Amino acid sequence: MSLATLHTKAMALRARVDGLPIAIAARVTGVDRALAASMATWIRMHREEGEPLGSTPDHFVAGGAAPCFALLRIASDRPGTFYGAIIATFCLPILIALRWVL
Image 1: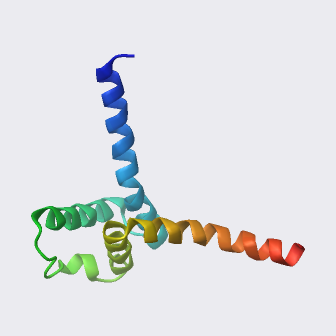
Image 2 (image 1 turned 90 degrees about the horizontal axis):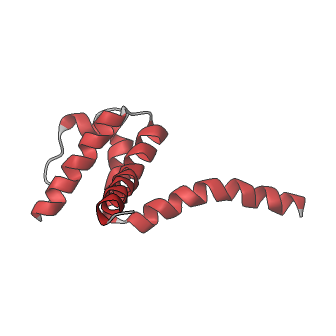
């Protein structure tokens, strides 16, 4: 396996991992994945420029898009909290069921 192949595979893996919060937030909130991707791009663009987020576009905070935007902001600002909450969401019912059984 050449170095170029490893680099290509690593970049593809990075793209999938970077898209994971977008897919999770879109699925949980029922928002179109393209809208969630545009939200993540907007957040990332303002983070890279080092400026405060300022006024948010209206279509990001209207209706069902607001929870998706909030999840993506949490994923951007505090990734540990985001992934911890996702894991806890799946573990809590299992722990409760084990508590009743044992």
